Image 1: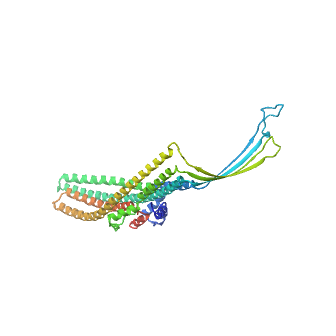
Image 2 (image 1 turned 30 degrees about the vertical axis):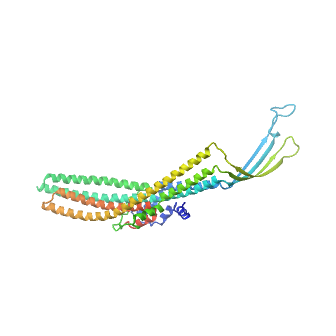
Image 3 (image 1 turned 120 degrees about the vertical axis):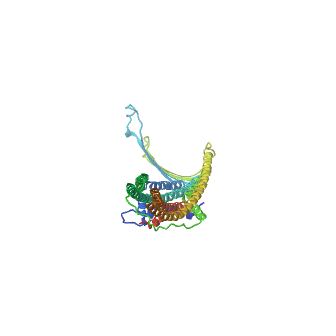
Length: 453
């Protein structure tokens, strides 16, 4: 059973995303930043709007469950006119006519209140647990939106960086091709070097064209979330810190996830709801007591009486006792069904806990690996630049050929792409880790936005 504090916190979490984005800083620069993109997504993304609608629909179950414990008031009214007579004129009277009839009218007011109804009480408790589960699901959807926006945003930046290196690689390949042709024309190198340079230039051009298409698709994916197009985004600063997160211990992150992961919270509330459903199904075989009070008023005329129409009143107060002895096995079958459903919910909770532990551990290791990878790839760029410089010098003095230069160039540009991708991997894996731990929030978007330029 969860604490009241957790229940209150989840109710506050649900639906607070639209309020949180109001606190995001707004930039007037032409390029869109992460905060602006997130604000648009929070308002326009169909998935988060669907999640909010689902929560609002689920929230009504509390009122539905409470209704069986509150009084029920019913009022009925009727008015009729009765006539009788022969179908046509006879010696004994005139033909049928509505004018010869008489009116009857009246109304009834009844109030009933359940005094003892365990089935309804447990159903109400189940509805309250289901409402908390819906709140946890909505909060989880809001966390997923944060991750989706960040992933789409940095996928654009990733593609932009890749495209920049492919363009630079194509330009460098064109220069090598031109120099190779000049040296071939004066008889310094064989024709095979020209072919190698041409093949390298063609490959660089193809890579650039493919990456241009990837960038367009990345922008389209971002626009599908925000509901509008985007032409330029602010980039991640080169000063963005790449470092391990606190708490640094893997076990501490797992413990954090066990206490805060929203998927686990939703599964816990689902189990609580199914337990109450099982109690409600068992209580369907318990006796019920309710009290009913009623008032009726009726007025009826008599065509055979010389007295005018007389109104009558009646009141009643009834205490009802009901004990279902046998319902053809229906209640027993529903009880077994509810308990089996509860058992399935227990297993679902266990699976969610294990999945959360696995996800947290994997994301933690990914972040730690990313920290080391960024450092290693930064050093690899320095090494690749030195290697290219040495290879170019060797080609000038005849100890290296054009193939060596081409490979050194290709290695340098690939190293630069790998370095940029490692930085973006660190950002996304960090957000994944926070989501697995249940602590991802719009504040993370605000913090990241401070490192955009």
